[in-house]
Structures are given as structure tokens and as C-alpha cells.
Length: 454
Image (cartoon, rainbow, N blue to C red; front, side):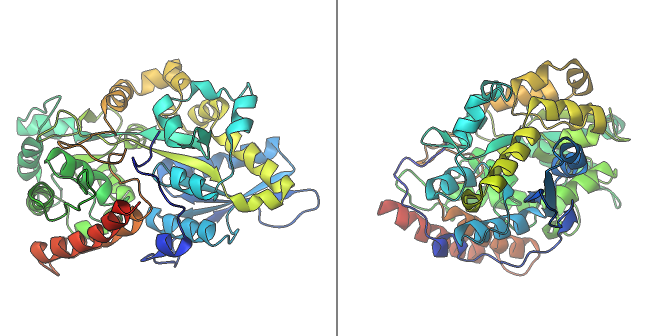
């Protein structure tokens, strides 16, 4: 189970909300929000990645099968979703009934009583088959062995590269590349109209620091040592950040600060980048369009460790505010159950294309012949990587929490967001690295000191 090794005190809303921008932008609505007699409307706040956009397009199928339930879907960019959902559950606003919630948030929100306990519903429904869900992912949505969300899709990270561009340049990608090899490739493959590699530079602990923390880990750095002493200005962390900056400058895309997952996906899918280090879930999007067959996939690059991929899942959780409305609570569970079921995987494969099904959560998905055939380039590798990553000690040194690309303490959301903004300022040339790391160290240490006191 993912939790800190020290007990976590109940998180007060002011702590979690500190430093968050609460303005939600980039929303798109789907579904019917009108109040009809005998119809329960469930408001679903979702991250706007490709898998969730596919879900939004398939929701009419759910509504046809459940004419007494309407789903009002709000799609947001990742940072905006986190800000809005965190504010809503922490202040008991009740604006959203169902939310996409990350592996980092679920145990914390479950401990605080901000999400509905779904354990009994999931276990008592034989058709749902909770035992089919991969144990590490199921553990990630648990707090004290109770489930507070259900996994929609799981992922690790790997390196994606254009096989044709490597062949044209006379380059060969190793099955287990080092980061130095990747940086060299990026420099050689960059042209005036094509990036050698796309790496996230958009601020946000779940944007820039998702891939960047894995690089910190393999370069011998970490956010905290075993005594919760911050390590942001220590050599390992510094070396990783400097490497990231150098690689972006020599081989990366223009204006990196504006690039998160979605922007890199569009750049790579449009043929304007030769490599991309990011989520394994991205492969389905790349392979379902005109780029099918053009990409190769290898394990996350390393420096001082044998592995460096992350472990993550996007999950569907129900806001505890629905406890006051039994009809809405029941409708919300029906939607969550449908969207995270074996039946949904089958529907998504048939309607959206098999490379795009949400994977990494259910063992049965990898047994579907159509999916195995469509994902032969990346699906087996994804399963291997997810089995090999070590969330207990992903880096060189031991750590007092379980997690790879995040620190499982409530304050990390604020720590990661603020520090990522400092690094973004360095990327954009607005400040120097020494000053950014010094300020990041102070931010991280304040959170570390709170852990020392618990």
C-alpha cells in the first residue's frame, strides 16, 4: 500500500490548498445538465487526456443503458483539474460528484474522508471482478485496506522513438539506453523543424516533475533523505536538473515551458519530434493513427539505477459529498463501475480502436486477442516495466515513503508545484539554477520539518 512510513495527521484544507491557483480554465462540457423528472445527474470532472476523452465520447452508451442517469462531463487540463478537485473536496463544495484522481491523492483523500469508500460495492459485485485488477494498482487506491477509488488505467514510463529517423541517421537504439545516450541522440536528430526529443517543461508536480523526478532518482538524487531532510540542492538532484536543462537546450523542443503531456503528444504525433520520454499509455494514441508502426519503445533511460520508470494510475473516485444523496451516490457508483469494468474495455476497443483501450489495470485486458495484436510493439513491454519498477526505493538511496515520481505526503502537491515553477523560470531564462534550487530547498524543507514532527 502506498503511504508514508510515519503516520499522517488528518490534512486540513488550508494546508492542501496553500499555493494553489483556484481558477479553472480550458473546460469543455459534455452530457445533459438539465434536471429531468426521475433522472439523476452526475457531474464528472476529468483530466483531458486521450483515454478520458474517449470515455467522454462513449458516455452516451452508458446513458442509453441507464436512462435514469445523465453524466455531465467537465474536461480540464491536469493542473486545472487538480486545483479544482482539491478545492472542492477540501472545502466540501460538492461541485463534482465523480472525479479522475491520481495515485498520489487517493490515499490522502481517503484518509481525510473526502472520498466514498467503494470496497463493499466492488467486492460484492461478482460481475465487476475486483480480483482481476493488478494488485499494485489496487493497493495504490487503498487506505487501510479499503478502496477509495477504482482504477481506470495504469501506466509506467518508457522512451518512444521514430524508427525511420533512427535508421536514416544510422543510429541504433539500445533496449536499455542510458540518459547520456539519449541526450546524444537528441542532439544528432534535432533539425530546424524537428525536436530531437520532447520533454515536459510545463510547471506542475504532475506535469514537469513526473518525468523529471524519475531522472532525479536515477541520477542519485531524491526529494528527501530517510530523516526527511530535503535534498533539492544536493548534488544528485542538481545534476539531474542540469542534465534536463542541457538536454532541452541542445536537443529539445522550442518553448519547453509550454509543453506538458498533451502538447508533447501532439508534437510527436505530428512528426515534429524524434523521441519522447513519457507515459506508457501514450503508445496507444500514437499507434491508433497514421503513425502506426513508426515507433519503437524501450525502457526508461537510466544513469545510476537499473530501472527508472514510474508507476501511476488515473482512477475514478466519488466525492464524499454525495453521501447525503442516496440516489446520486448509487448513480455515481453505477458510472464508476461501468467505466472501470471489463465490459468498458471491450466497448472502447470495438468503438475507439484496440490500441486506445485503457490498460495497465486489469489482467484480462492483456488476454484479449485483438488488444494483444494491436499492442504487440508496446503492451508486453509495458507489463514488464510495471512489474519491475520499485516504488519502495526507486533511486539510489532509501526513502521514507512509497512512491516513484511523487512524495506521498499532503504537502508535496504544493512543494512540487512551487519548485517546478522555479525550474520553469530557469528553462525560460528568467532566473539562475543556483537560486532556483536554493529556494526549492527551503520550500521542500518546510514540508520535511512537518514530517519530522509526526
